[in-house]
Length: 161
Image (cartoon, rainbow, N blue to C red; front, side, top):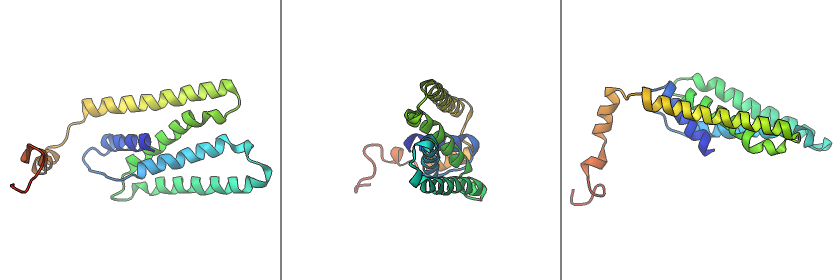
């Protein structure tokens, strides 16, 4: 949840650099995509009498993810955080839930692939944020106008101020 949320916010900084976004929807989409991975990895382990529930879960969760991602391009919605969180949720779920895969060779390679891809996305995105992104003058003036840390240099506002 936390790593999906962090990466969703990082993706938002890269793709929507002149906007401000808040919320946990990227992290929630990370959890939903990880749920899809869990269902897929346990697909054949579900007893015959519970397979209709499994199929219903898969349909509902996939429908939620697809509809949320499709509606992410509405105005005032942070599509980058949604897609970033969903991608990291998927990759991290593959890493953490791969113990459900019975073939040890497939388990090893899929864990390496997903772990490397997740780490590479974090590293490349962080590098891009630190080296290429520069806040616009408009946002810097907003920051200066709301900089309470420097207005109250000791421990924040007190009653004497």
